[in-house]
Image 1: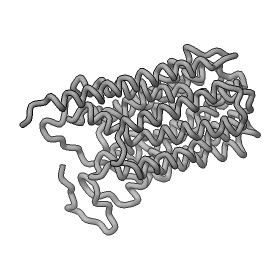
Image 2: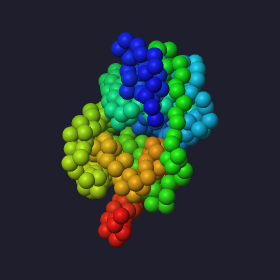
Image 3: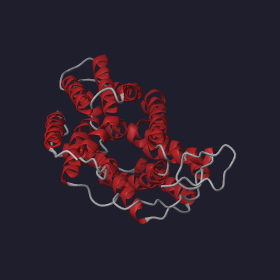
Image 4: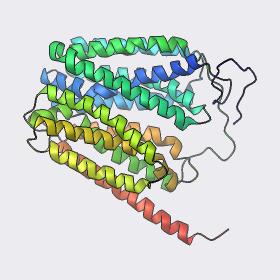
Length: 399
């Protein structure tokens, strides 16, 4: 792909395929993506509070999370295939209005309608995320811009989680939480109005398209299963706190401290990138999750519960940059790597869906056994890919 600088602008961002972006346009594209993922950072406490208020059952927590994540993933994928990247500002504003309306509608809802409203919210979030992904995909160094996006969205989620934990939800409950989420999402209208109006068309060279080979699909399946384990547990954070005899305030504190730890995990991964193998990171992350889930299964003190959840957040974000090397190792054509984002979103949706089948209103510890099985299954497939890949490389004929 060629970089088009035929219309240079002062202070333009030239690290892009097609016409250069103004800094305000790039910031706007990142900003709508941040708005699209705000809810995911606080979803465990929002849905947990709805359950505390008897507006959702324990199984409904998983189903509501699944509905939102699945809707987001499907819409993001379909938009990438079917929508032309034009009138992006209008699409962004309309999607944000729809997202705010979906959040506010939860204030008077109970039971199944909440599941439908979270699915509607996920659809709007998927459109917003499509805009951000489209911008990142058109940069020459997408890993740099993905890092900017990731850092921005984690800090935004952290700020919202702290506000909810310290001021909003202790006083106003679940309704206050969703109202605050709607207000925060409404702020996203500003970047939507300053983002790019359209994107240049992407051009792919021959040989880059097509479906991944079998080992690529297996790697994507392993990633989906592995990610689903963490998704199953994280959405039941508040319920697990209650099972340990702890209050909702402890769960909210555990959530925002986990977001702080995620920043540390990302920083550690960045520092070690290139110096540690992905399979080693998978093993370290799996050991950390085992510790976290063991603590969650006990009558832990508040500080231990909070520390364990922080360890889980650190481990999850420490793993994130090493996912792509794992898939590329299985499929050097990189066709599977192009689908890694969709696999992670589907995994995040699958975990809560499966969790809804193994929890009850009085006991949600079944989700820990489910997560253990999912994680070990995913890790076993990753190990098989790793070691059979070495064997295939050693037996390949020399050129």
